[in-house]
Amino acid sequence: MSIGSGHLMAARAIREALHRLKPHLQVTLYDPIERVFPFFPQWGNAGLAVTTRYLRSVYGKSWGEERSPWVRWISQWAIWQRSLPAFQDGVVLATHVVPLRMALHTRERCRKNWRVYGVVTDYGAHGYWPIEGVDGYFVAHEEICEDFIRRGGRPEKIYPTGIPLRKGFEPGARWQAPQGERVLQVGILAGGVYSGAYTSMEAWLREFWEMLEARRDRVHLTVVTGNRETLREQVGRWAQRSRLEVDVRGFVNDMVGFMREQDLLVSKPGGLTVAETLACGLPLGCLRPGPGAESANVSFLRRHGLSTHQKALAKSCSRGINPGCFGPRRSGLWRRACGRSHRGCVCEGGCSAGWLRRVRRHRCIRSRAPGRSGSRES
Image 1 (cartoon, helix red, strand yellow):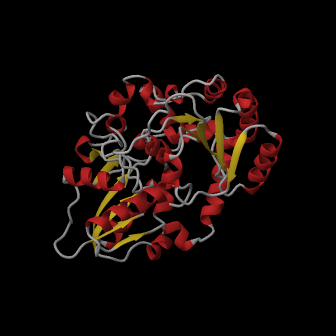
Image 2: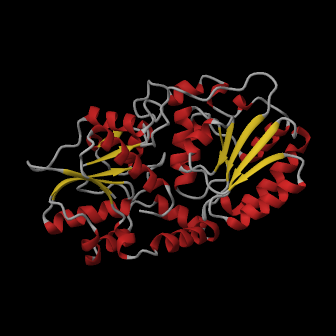
Image 3: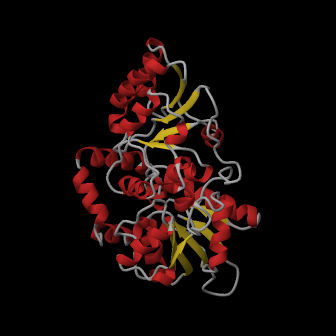
């Protein structure tokens, strides 16, 4: 689904890995709802923005529920049949629970020979994911397996593979802590139209910059505003009045290159962003998380000692502390939380190719029927 960017980015990463493995394999991306209602991503994101900002407790409570009647009801609408794949034999990898249920319903109703899998793109699993009939789940970490089991999932169908990431996030060339006295490169991802973090972005940026004025000769800020043109103009005016060195950008075409240029990344704690920073070893400063998945991601980081609150982040930068204090390099926590001893960690071959290798290692995807099979992601 195209609500947010994480689900779509994960699906693209899987397609990229499959094409590298088998260039002639037929792989197609499907967003069943957008195919029927092209305006859905804009409306869906706007609705999510309102919910996470003004109905935080309601959204958080629904995220933790064990069942969702409305998800089950919507997924059974006959209108989706024309938007789902027409192939008879193959594999469906769903990066969101709604198309996962749609695929299961279509398989049963139309007698498809599909293998249907869920790909969880956060470090927490909401109660909607465990569904009877799913052939397996690929989750971010071994801890998520335990969460699935507590919610009624079957252990033999849960595979800790990490989160599929784009090419370029291989763990070989990790972030290196800056040595000596030099300018600290801080990247701030301030774009997007929703999230608990971005609703207070302007106020936080103003406070953050004020605290850094005393260290303006040691910090360089790059602010990426995405599609928020109003925020981009506002940040541009602040930058002109500020004595800080600030680069304001709308969109970044090469996010891999951008992240590797930074000493510290400040962002909302989305699942893909957390996974990407962990994969390349970049310290992450988390903004205030929204309810649901973002809060679960922050909880995961805190359990492993890898989280820095946004206020502590500003104070540390203003004092000129080495950026290594923000990230996993500050102690042995990095290896314990994300070392190779954890087979479910994104750092063990964090890119999509590494994710696919771990899927093949589990030998969990097999065609339901003999014959030519395709592969699809929803």
